[in-house]
Image 1 (cartoon, helix red, strand yellow):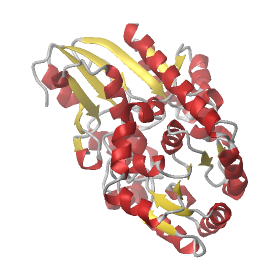
Image 2 (spheres, rainbow, N blue to C red; image 1 turned 180 degrees about the vertical axis):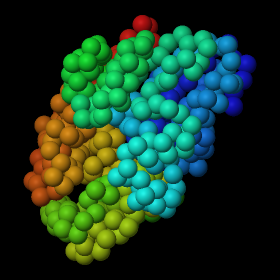
Image 3 (cartoon, one colour; image 1 turned 135 degrees about the vertical axis):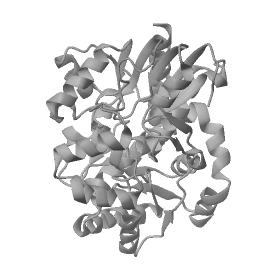
Image 4 (tube, helix red, strand yellow; image 1 turned 90 degrees about the horizontal axis):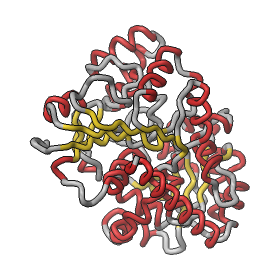
Length: 405
């Protein structure tokens, strides 16, 4: 861990667990901070000591450990985004567990709110109800606290104590930016003025396009590419889609899309942490795709996932960042609403309300998937490329304002 730097920049976020979007955001924001920043002054902070480098992520340290390391040195803390405003202490603690252990803990505590909060505080060693926002007084010499392109569309429904803590922490920040207008409205109703900023992942093609193209020619990605000479759809869904009826409906819709375009289907996980994507769910979906060439992409490496999406004929899934990466490479993409999920609860719909979806719906229920993907794939490449350029430009402008502010 770095020591002795005059000024530290701490990137703080949920990249202490395996989630595609969070791992990617840390890389993008690190590049946006500037190539001239001394490497020994940059730290990655989370809620647990984790080394995600084997998956393309970073070595992450707890804020308490970083505080002890930096001592009296000046610190800038940048919250790198993600749905951090509504991630509770309980949710954070469970998602940082090994999956088999998480299942047992949830079964024991999920319906006991007080007990689960006590357990989570003991597990993570922090008292905060909104733990992915910087606690007060943790660092001695804080220059700036930046919240960049955060999400929080469910903030209105979290328990009042947590919402009050979020408002208090954001009120003390140097600058606050959110990635969708719904979160911005919720915060304005609570007295927080904030900017509207694109999610940093819109820059992935501009910043890492060459790296991702090279990655596509090797290993797991090369095997997929050679196995689908006519092309494939990159498809992802969270464990919420795992009931038999939903999986059968999803398979039927995917087969229609693939058959009409002579494409295969590649299923991939956008997150291996608890409450993310379930490998068993994908296997059950694959067995239902009997009339379609299908493969299960088993790599959890961040750059492999980026390459898989970038070299597909389009993305379908419940992952916001899967869709953002597809959009950055000017590909058709379509979000999936969870069973019974209203559009107003969708991060994908909320993001598109500000930043567009190139003439296609942002997200649809499973039974409308084929029709929605027809619309997405009918959009012209020129329109998709222009949207990708506009979002990248808007993201750079937003970050410049933060840095200059």
